[in-house]
Length: 251
Ligand SMILES: O=C(O)c1ccccc1NCC(=O)[C@H](O)[C@H](O)COP(=O)(O)O
Image (cartoon, rainbow, N blue to C red):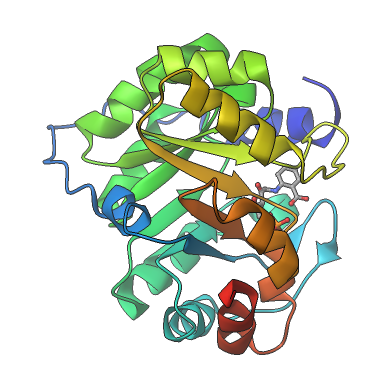
């Protein structure tokens, strides 16, 4: 895996190399994250994102305060980055956000070990991100582990081959990332193309457009196609997160 993605995956694998892969007992599926994205209209997943490889430092957000602002601004769910080296995230941020809002919370990380899912469930997250670019054919096994733990899974794809893997794994929620994680280039045409393709292939689950959205006009393009949109940098760096969330999503 080339580029920054390869480096992050290697680092996260090292972080969890000594962790137990035991999941523990099965937990009931609450499906709160899925339900929050399934209502009428385009739902917003607003991301607590303090830094990133593409932007460097974005804003020194207090996670709980940021999440409350997003909730006030109309978000349907919150995404919290827990990767420490490149995104300035951590599990405490996840914990703080879960305690601060009534919305379902997604653990956004580079899941490479079952312990990362166990942690997400134990800390009270509703969902975890599973990246096909990272997990490949193991995506289905990780999806089963997430469901065993009562978690929803946002299964992320960036091209047609990855979409095929997500469909074969019987993902219920598929996210299409506009950002190529090897080059970090953003192409907002990726989500519409793959979302249409997923529907043509009979996918009846939840479809999420991810990354690169900054303006209401860009949101208008994806509104008729996606069930939800995941937005991080443009909201996190806005200075007034609640107002920015509401203005972005106002048609
Ligand atoms: O954001 C990055 O630079 C990045 C680099 C390498 C791997 C992942 C990366 N981002 C993860 C995400 O998918 C985004 O945080 C999320 O979709 C929100 O994107 P944006 O609204 O563009 O911040």
